[in-house]
Length: 139
Image (cartoon, rainbow, N blue to C red; front, side, top):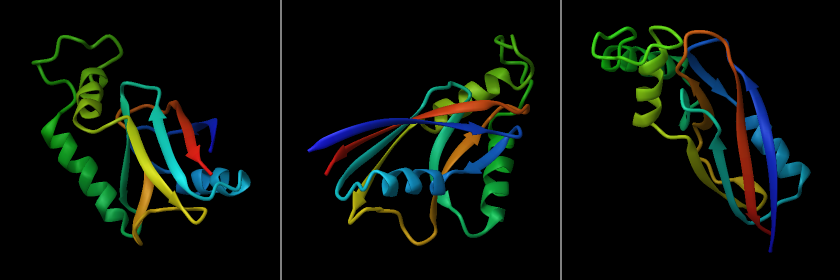
């Protein structure tokens, strides 16, 4: 059994989903991992990780639209606005989703479904650079 750590830096263009499945698959392939578990951890509190459909871009648009209605920027309920109207809304959106994912690796491949991709979901309106820690344990 072995384990390996890596970190990806992902640029966002502001609010929205950024697929990075290919970068994760490349790292799995380059290290010749066969069987095990991959854990991804986002090192931020105003963005999140998710596995979501990667075929129809309307899914990503609809997710953004739903969260805009659920947690609107600038809600008068929010006191924490140190970095703008989208600040606290971004933290709440992260709290409702997740910053960690665990994905099995089988036969050297991520055990994802046909239409599944790995996404960073940027909840802030301005571009950011986000760091994702990857940890593999297995063979």
